[in-house]
Length: 331
Length: 279
Image 1 (cartoon, one colour):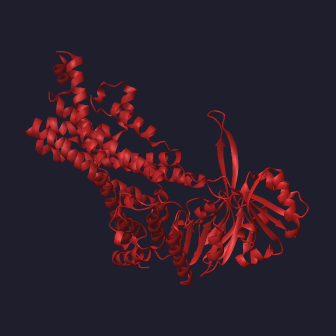
Image 2 (cartoon, each protein chain N blue to C red):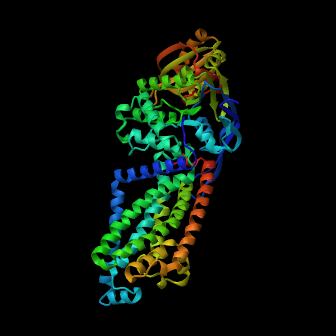
Image 3 (cartoon, rainbow over the protein chains, first blue to last red):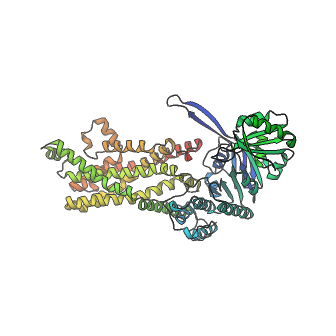
């Protein structure tokens, strides 16, 4: 059995929405019958937009959420029935910097969690030394976490996930909010852990990160796996298309829908170029890039869009997602 | 990885949770200072009301109805027990919600430590905190106002220790409600005021309507307050109060079991609905 086996795992949330006394029951299918396995020494990427079901999947795997149906096995133990054993075999880093005690020092945080993992005290000391050095926090081990920078908190949270040397590691957006240098450090450590034989599940909405780190990627959307395989194989599927990326202003989802009605365009998707900017990005898949480009540009100019950059690009995992769903990962 | 198991593992986890709680108290000292001041403030409030509203016969009426002329010690004992129950309900009941809002609750629940150990660990911190509050508030007051009753404080404290066990059960119960339903301060503020009203914090419960006294009878604080007053003010001994000590011990069996069962039930419900990470 692989360290991680996921069999038809589903999660449905029953919620009530609306104003007080007029709440209407609503069913949300967060994860819809997904199956996959992760062998030893593999980095498995779960890629998808926000709300796709990545974090719910991770939380079911680490026993924080009870599955509605299906089951998953971590190190051979059922997440539905053997939760304590699952927890003992997992190292988990959940997203966000508020996963630590801010009024404790970096070292005190690790000591506290080591005790919750029932680690032997002499071994704990040695392990904490190693980890603080590994994530570059040795010199700040005695500082209260409230005085750490965001990057330092995330590195400490990452170190916490490695404390118990679990065979299975779950990292939920491990490099979100990190500067490039820290991201690089975390990625190097993840690669080293893979070499050490850990089975690693990584969730991210950063397609570059999924591409460079993962041995296999599951692209997840609306709770379903829409594509699964090594990044190179997934990208090969869209290799036959030209991918045109157009950056500019006055783009919208409607612009992408209109472009998709062109007979030469197989898929078109819109996203914001920057998280808090006016610039938009159109990504267009077509068999005849050079022939259709003038027609596309003419259409955009007629729609009073401002075009700042046009490029033909190599397909990425984002293009795999667009090809499968017709939407951008950055929606 | 080298791990411990069995009792050694449990004690290691308990010690870590205990020390984390103590470090938080020492690094957020405001809450502790408030717990120390509030019993005195409430006693002054009640004393003032008696003096200024009760009129010239207030003191004699008080003595006739309570059996003591020592208003300050009578009220401070009630206040100290109320504050103890306040600490337990806030710390055990609200602490989990507090951790939920900080984002650390999930981190605790990710570890292979049992939920029971987590709750007991938090309770251990409270035993120390409430002991310090009791010793300072009651010890200082009795030493100044009623030096002859000072030696009785040890027995009074033993009563409090027995009473803490069912109180932690009530704390577990609230911990479950809070994890599932959020809004901890609505629960705790309401319940703390109800406790003060029902348990004879500032007056004898015997003056309450009969049906209200029935509710007082199922709350451990009622017995702790009454026993402590009898020990400190009337020189009775723990042995002579065996009847109410027996009731307290019975409640010490019922509340923790009931509280933990409710906590586990609501915690499982929260795991189904994904409540742990919700604010």
